[in-house]
Length: 107
Image 1 (cartoon, helix red, strand yellow):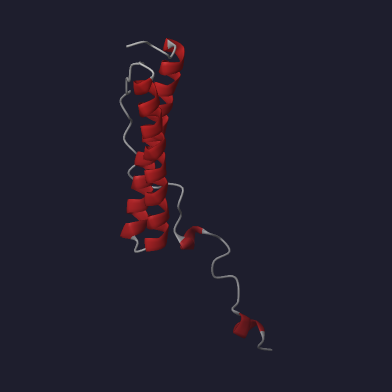
Image 2 (cartoon, one colour):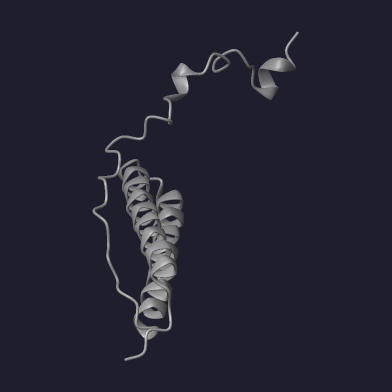
């Protein structure tokens, strides 16, 4: 088989594949978090995003394979088990300070 891809390009693509797989895993983790909170639409959105990342991986894999390159996947770090960026609503200072429209209309 003729090699139609440089080692440098194959290495760069392999690195990108690792990033795409890592993103896919993190999206699944986020989706599972929202699914556990019964936020089904948010979960669905992140599951779909994870699938999209895996589609990119498969395009890269097919390209490297078809051009005679070598696929070398790097070990993936585990996704973060908790979403530390999400805060409980009570942690926002403005929660509870606003009045509802009905309360605002009372004199």
